[in-house]
Every structure is written in C-alpha cells, then in structure tokens.
Image (tube, rainbow, N blue to C red; front, side, top):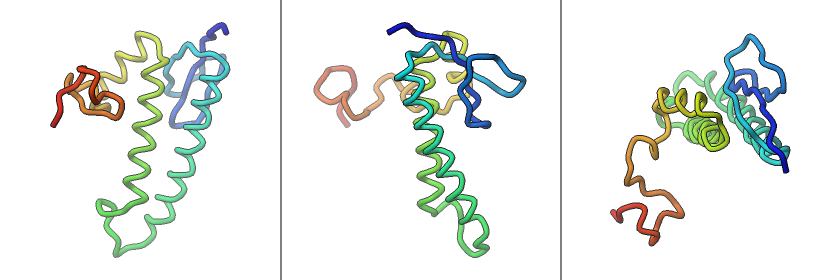
Amino acid sequence: MDKQRYYVSVSANMVGTEPSTTDQLTILATEEERNHLLGLLNQEQKMIERTYLRAHIPYKSADHDKATNRFNDSMVEVYRYIYQIGTIETKRHIEYMDILQELRTPDYHHQGYGGSGLGRSR
C-alpha cells in the first residue's frame, strides 16, 4: 500500500492532507497507519477530558493522580508513533522536544528488547 503525506496537529487532534496554520508534524503513512494514529489521538482526547474533570478537585494533587499519569503516557505514545512514521524533519523536531525516553538512552529497556541483544538487562 502506498504512503501518503499527512499533516498532524496533536493539539487540534487532526490529521489532514493539506498543511494548516496550526502546529503540525508531517508523516508519511498508509491509510492503516493514518487510522491507527487517529485512534491514538482520539484516545488522547479522552485522557484530556478525564484530567480536565479531575482538575476541578482542589484538594487532589495532580502529581499523584492516575488520570494525569495515563494522560502523560498516552501523549508519549502519540509522539512515539508519529516519530515512527514521521519525516526526517518531524523526527528531528520530536528529538528536540526530548520527550521519548528511548531516544535519550541507547540502552533503553523496553518491552520487546529483552533477549535481543539490543538493550542491557537491568
């Protein structure tokens, strides 16, 4: 299946074929990859809504909140996938953002690395 150029705005929760004036990252993706990314963005939107509801509880600290942790994990997963299918410029931008642990540490211990010789055991 051929890959097509798409423009992604994480903040606007959009994947389009035309560049826009919002913040955007460029990806080259099949329709299946695009649909997977849209699913991740929809999941991220649900996490935003959950953390928004929690934000109105004045006595609950956000740094000990499961909803905040899930939101952060979801956001990282979105950027991880965009990095995987992104253009060189997009990859450079995400590297500059410094949000993906596996880009910071070459011996990153991640599910699937075990026993492959790619990462050190801890």
